[in-house]
Image (cartoon, rainbow, N blue to C red; front, side, top):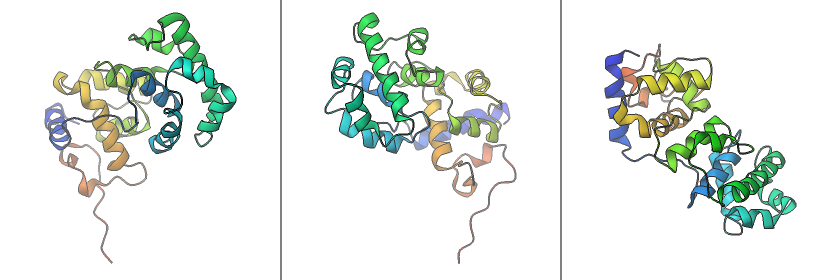
Length: 215
């Protein structure tokens, strides 16, 4: 993607969705952290289905510890890798209580020190909960950044650095959500829906996918 195309690319995404946010359901910063931790290799829909049952029962570090591993696994059974995630979530709860007064820390280093929390999860929390211009690169954003030519890279970290360098400052806060939603619903892995993409004219992907023929 040419430098001159980046600003209209993001301006168009902002016009279509001025206030994007995560599709994970949460009401507190801890709920967001827990939901993002659970979402690794799982869909937001599946995580939301589980947390709609879990959070009304236990939605704080102490409440989850009181719930216990076996009961927690019962709530998370529909989520991929739920046993490992349940252990990580409870270990995270213990660290939050012991080292952070039960609060979610606001630094990348402290977040990444939590069990089951990697760079992507930390970036989501920093961006969505604390308003930092962090770029959480998942499979959707990795694909969109490469396919459009916006920030080509072989690894999430390379793409993250490329996006932080190329996205204009006024779009950085929301860029993660715009790119994720673009990849989830339009620039899909198997067949990019170029014929209905609002930013196709600035995208470097060729050849563009034509609209399907009507029967």
